[in-house]
Length: 159
Image (cartoon, rainbow, N blue to C red):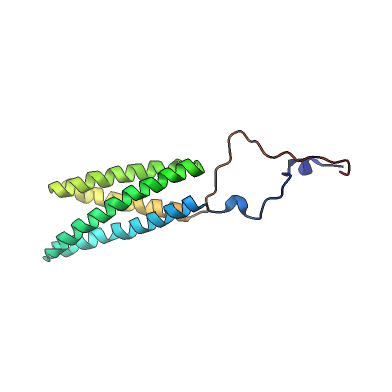
C-alpha cells in the first residue's frame, strides 16, 4: 500500500546533493568576484605609495583603477549570466550598484574630487567584501520553477 510519503517522492531518484550542487555560472561569478577583490585591495596600497612621496604610485593607482573597473564590468556580465541561467537576480542587483559606485569613483578620481573619491572607495571595498562573502558562503543551484511541476510517480498494483 502506498503511503503519502511514497507519493511525494519523485519517480526518478535524485543524485545525492544534486539540489545543492554549485552550477558553472556561479563558479564563474565566484572567480570574477575573487579577482575583483584582489584588484580592489591593491588600490589603497598604490594610493598610499603615492601619498608617501613616490610618484610612481599614482601611475600604479591609475592602472589599478583601470583593472578594477574593467573587472567590475566583467563581474556585471557574469552576474547577468547567473540571473538568466539560475534565475537569481540578487547578484546582478548588488553588482549593478557596485559598478555604478566604482564608475562614479573612477571619474571622481580622474577629476581630483578626493572628497568623493576617498569615501566612495572605502564604501566600494566594503560592498565588494560583503559580495565576496555572499558568493562563497553557499552552493547555489538553479532556483525551482514557480509552476511546481515535479515528475509524477506512477503507481503500480504492487504498491
